Image 1: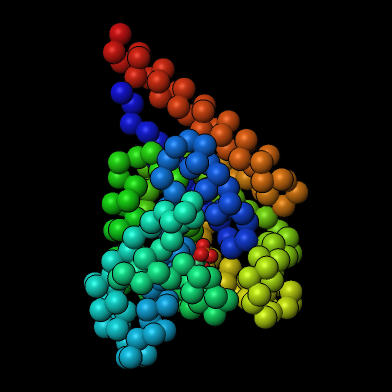
Image 2: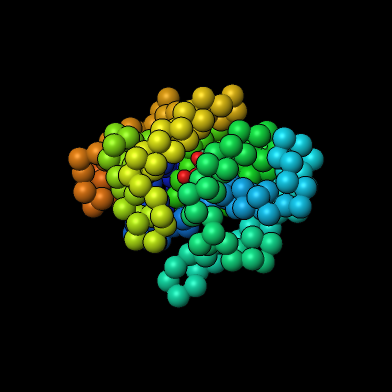
Length: 236
Ligand code: DC
């Protein structure tokens, strides 16, 4: 039997990674791993930490060492349990987005989360979304996508999501924060946001979600076929 694939989806905030990754995982019967949620979880713990000095490496190190992260399915939605606390809603607050971006540049955090992510994806049959899945965490992934869209469209999508949740913000504020976060995520020294050399770049600016999913399923099916052909030629 062939091992199921490791599929990575990287890209900037608001490009549609979460929606597309969840749909792909569901249709393929794969596990979905939201690695951004993990960085957000560390950001919440850091914010709540009594030793709130985040410049101090040991605060983040303590948080990372004691970290117990679990994605659990509750009534059809995925919840994130962090050290037993359900942080599903809290991690989506706008201030946590900026803090997650800041702490994600720290080596101690990246090392620990990358290790957890590699374990989650090791057996295959997984769709992992993030910023460095195809470049650093799974450089040998079977299919790598880089999902992008223009910043105006991305920030408009993010604003609408926040509005539905009742967050008090403005389109201008969301745009500013997103541009700032893109800059941080792309310019950091460690695992910066960029497409892997062998990633398939997909622009979702003018596409419906279903179009993007179908396009990606086409690439995935091609890869599955190529692997089956390779295996059967080895066996014969
Ligand atoms: O995907 P997201 O917007 O929920 O991610 C929040 C932040 O976490 C993002 O600004 C950068 C960081 N992140 C990262 O550095 N590496 C990842 N693989 C995923 C997220």
